[in-house]
Each structure stands twice: as C-alpha cells, then as structure tokens.
Image (cartoon, rainbow, N blue to C red):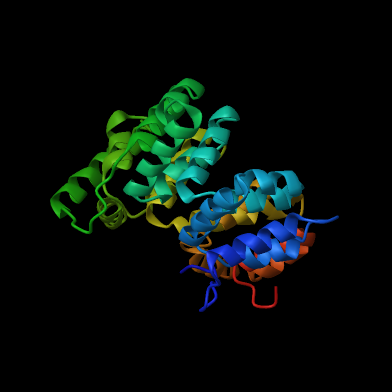
Length: 316
C-alpha cells in the first residue's frame, strides 16, 4: 500500500551522506540530488542517514536542510526526513498552537496511527517540547472539542482483531439513542470512539447500519455547518476508512481556489509509506483524475518533483 520506491540495491549510508553534503556545497543547492536520495529511502534508512550525517559533520541533517532549502519544498523535505514519531509530534504541536474548531490534525494523528505509533508520538512530544501532548490539547482546546480530543490523543487502543458481537449490538443501540437525542458530546458516545479497538468500532458501526438503516455519518450530518459534528464524522472516517478521510483532505487541498500546501504536504509525507496507494485509488475513483496529475496541475518546481516521487509517479 506504500508508494515509496526504494532501490533494490541501496547504496551504503556513508555514500548517501557524502552526496547530501555535496548537494549543499558550492554556489547552489542540488535539489534534484536531495530528492533522488531522501525521496527513495524508507524511515529506517533516513534515520541512519541522519545519524551518520551528524557523526560525519557534527550537524543535524535537519538543520543543514533548513539552511539550504526554502518554501514548500523545504517544509516537504524536512517533514519527510523526520522520524515518523518526531514528525507526528511536530505536526501535533503546530496543531495545538494554531488550533481552531475546524482544525482536524490532532484527531487525524490520534485516529490513523496504531496504538504504538501514537504512544511513540507522545514520547517524542515530551522529548522535544518538554511537556505532554495531553496537557497542550487540554490547554488549547475547549468545550465539546476538548471532551473529544483529549481522550483521543490519550488513548492506547487494543490493536487486535477480536470482536465482541454482543457488545457491538448494545453499543450500536446506545450510539443510536445518543444521536437521536442530539447528545453528540455525550461521554458514552465519546468513550466508544476514544477507547474501543478499530475492529470493534467497525463491527459496532456495521451493526448500527444493519439495525437502523443509515451509516452513522449520515445521522451525524444533522447540521452540516456544525464543526463539532464535522469533527465527529471525520473521527469515524479515520477510525474505519482512513483512505476516504485522506482523499477528502487532498481534494480540498488541491482545488480551483488555490492549493493548501500544508495539508497536501502533510498527507503525502505521512501516508507515502503507509496507505498512499489506497488513497490514490480513492482519489481517482472520486475525482476521475489521477492524484499525480492533480499535483502537477497545482504545484511546480522541486516541491512538485518531491511530491511526485513520494506518491510513486513513474515519470517524475
């Protein structure tokens, strides 16, 4: 499901490090060389490159890239080069600082990562920001949003495949009751979404549809302008069909009114090694245009080249 292409014969780390150093030397920066190396190494390989670069030159590769690059290309390379847990911590910290009721990044990180990945992100947050993600979320959000987001970012869900069908039936009924009564921020509704395993939630929501005739998200559309309901629907999507959630983020990021480079960069860099192939398929199905063609229409230069490499565009 990954779209990252790594050479069958990966050069020695020392060679990658030397070439990256060369890319920064002289009069100009060789952006193509940077893309050809970092754009074709997986997370473990990028981590080794970063360690070896620091040992060889006494400087963090991230700082070296920061000095040499600029604009959207710089942000794309920096976010991509970070260890996934560090990246999630940085994105979450940005989201808490700029939090608005329409910002879904905290929920996205909490609901599309595995329990272990979310735990590692929280640990990376401690190390980098000298405080916890939970305390920042509690401090920066409020009302119903805090009621939902705090338990989501604090969660450590069971990751297995076991399903309790009796529980699925009773919790489907409970969800239907709460939604029928417009008790959208009820603690029991939030408890189910924030603590149950994704497999269990899928079973519960399938039961909900079978029993009551609608997808839960259809019943959560009572007020299309209500941003808390939008966050609840996105939470359900991230927990059950993340590729549909990310397709929508990309669709909104690449549109006629201008490009949201922040969202585009975030989705491509965080999903290229996970499920970008599924997201691309969903994007093509929904928009009748391949994602790479949409990227070409809306971006340019080295930024475009980096994104195309990461989404697996053969002619990039």
